[in-house]
Image (tube, helix red, strand yellow):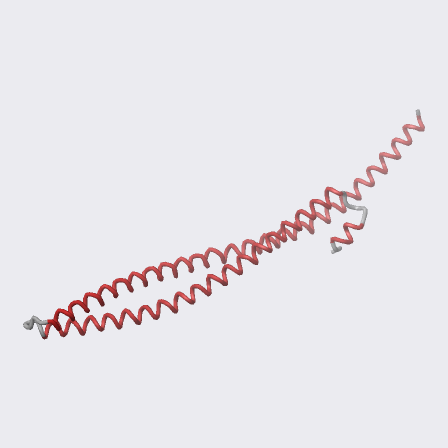
Length: 176
């Protein structure tokens, strides 16, 4: 296959054909740029997903610790149910605070889990898009090669027809 610069230096292609080939080349470059951006975004989302997984683990550990603390407080509450004292009031207050903390942490885990699924979905969406752009780029390259070959053939045919027309006009001119 001839390189584009060799084909452009030949007087075989018209300016319109050269412009069309340059347009196709710029479209190919734009698609390759989009693929590169999609790869970068894919990597960023993958890193973010890893970070969210790490954050989820530490939140789950906190939830377990808080639930154990709530269980301990519930045990104290049942043992001392007959005693109404300042100590029992403080423990009930602490229990309430821990329970609300657990609820907040569970809400945070739900939020982080939702983000995790969103990122996974984004990755699932971007992977086929990446493949699509790659396939389109290959198809475009194939089309450009085909157009170059066809244009060379058509140019040769047009040159022959012009030559034949020139001869025919010369014959008519000679006969008249």
